[in-house]
Length: 121
Image 1 (cartoon, rainbow, N blue to C red):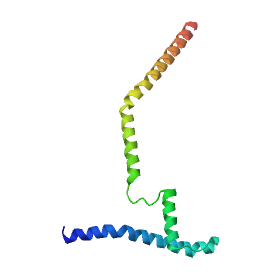
Image 2 (image 1 turned 30 degrees about the vertical axis):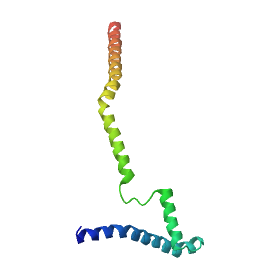
Image 3 (image 1 turned 135 degrees about the vertical axis):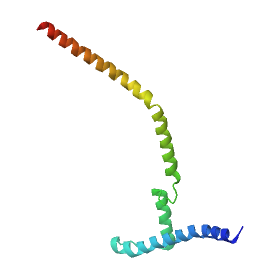
Image 4 (image 1 turned 180 degrees about the vertical axis):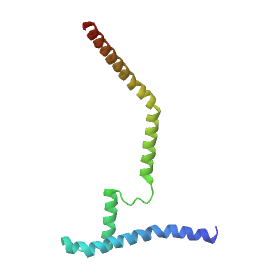
């Protein structure tokens, strides 16, 4: 393994924890600067801020850095739509046939009515 790849692994190992620490510090700073004055709550510690982040992740499912589950759901929906579109011709034909029959009946009825009206005249 050359020196260039070692730096990449170190970067990958250090960045996520540093990002988490930074976001936690931002949450703590915002909480402590805004909420005590606005709604009268106490200031929180760093660990309490991290707990709030974890709780929000559990409750609201945030922090989507990758496509993950959303990509899976999109692929599943795309597959379902493709299978439906394959049957589209089948469904369309089955829906068109009764419509065609109804239109023919209406035309025959109209011709029958117009034929009767011509006989009466």
